[in-house]
Image (cartoon, rainbow, N blue to C red; front, side, top):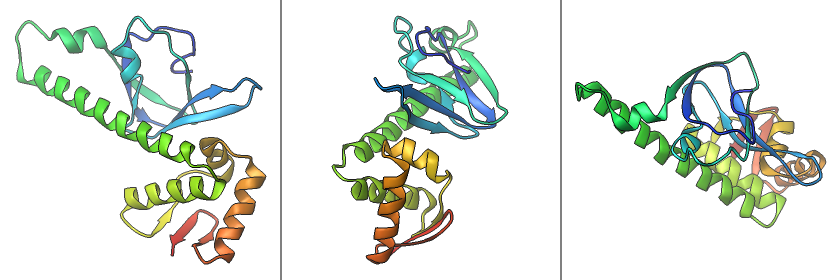
Length: 179
């Protein structure tokens, strides 16, 4: 566990090694992946900036992970020397918050789509843009993709097959092509 739901986070972290997911559980106990964090990704930046709030989610390593933690109070207050390095650290923090906001916006766009097909297409289009190609490698497996899109695994597989038959996509394992 990197951050546990129900705790207050006064620090944020940068994932130096490994990977992690921020997760929640719905009322029935089903796990929902909110975000996926890879090497270089930020953890807890929004929580650290809101020290009065408890975490609504858990951030859990999915592989051996090393996280560099930063106390939020020291980022905001600065050092006594008013050095350029500290100013740069604050600029980087603000940039990380902006990136996190955009990432969450894209996530919400996927979830707001009314059909499984539209959720999949939105997600695949986002990955295509990230990798700057209509041919790309999915960074996650089907189980994680189903959790991320908040759909049943079987419904995901069925719809991927239909989309392939309809000529919208081509795929072999995690290699995808948008048509």
